[in-house]
Amino acid sequence: LHKAELCQMDVSNYKLSQAAPLLHLVGHEYERKHFQKIHGDYSSLLAMEELQRMLPSTWNWVKQMQTLFGDSENLTTQSSLEQKLDFVKRRGFVDGILFTRSQLALPEFLSLDVVSINHIRSEARCCVIASALALHACNISRVGTSVLSSSAMSDEINGAKQILSSILRRKYSEQNQLESNVIEAIGALTKALAERDLGEEELVTLKNHALAVLHGNDPVLKLLDNRVQSFFRFACKWKSDTAPSGIAAPLQMETGRSTIKTNDSTATAGHGMNSTKEEFSLAAKKEASRLGFAYFGSDLIEVGNEARNIISLACTNYGRDILNRFLGVAWEGS
Image 1 (cartoon, rainbow, N blue to C red):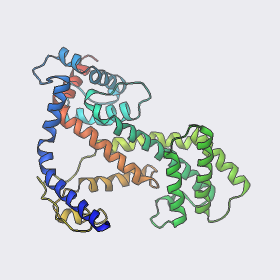
Image 2 (image 1 turned 60 degrees about the horizontal axis):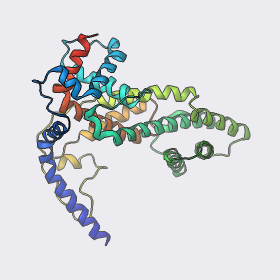
Image 3 (image 1 turned 60 degrees about the vertical axis):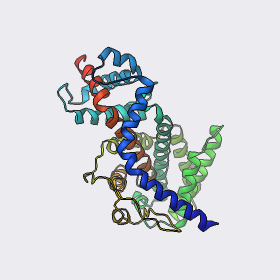
Image 4 (image 1 turned 90 degrees about the vertical axis):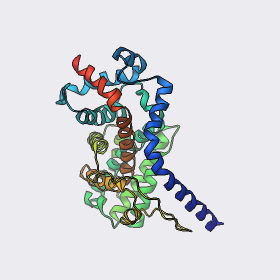
């Protein structure tokens, strides 16, 4: 039965690989036509006032973007489209949507991405909290923070890490239960790092740090809060150094095992697949380590790539006809 399921998975992967070139060819146009069916024709022939009435949430978002972040950027009405869209990705999307503290209706062209955006926010929050707790664990166990970027961790440390991540992702009806579970989990991680039992004073100190992190009063947490935004700005403006090489050939089918070998850097290239995600992951891993997220970097890289895909697709589909026009009017009125 297991081999039959693997064969079915191989067949499905093979069929998807054959469909991928067609999706790349027609996907953008299909999404734009679907958007027009819902909101109307947004072509360049449409008057600006009509476009603003057609897409009020997008127009309000662009105005807020310009008001909050325009003065810190060297953008003008003469700036290139690429410069404007980089501003949209870094400031408008990351600062103005993913990490905004104000109530804001999502732009109409992101209406299909609500679930993904909420997932990115949740994962970023968990990563920041877990990273702050891990840094305190290193300090109390006196092992140094360099251990968090080591590839040779014990099974006990890796197990404690997974438990902490799982606890932070759960939903709780009571704050006390969350706090109790986190204190227990970070205690186990600190013990594994120190390779000894913790003293009473160390346990009290660790508990105080954990509570400060969970209540949002910890200075390390506040520092990482700012840094995670920097990571997402990096992720969303990242561009591949490799020029697109056209449509990739379909993968060969290999009966009984997955056709995509993610642990082999040469596998994708050998089958003709683009390795943009792999290239992004390498760059994002360095940036995550630089900013202090090495220990939970893999989770952050995944949602960073998800955020990059969302806003890159939006800019490709609607950058020239909608965002560029709105940005021009917003800058003229400032």
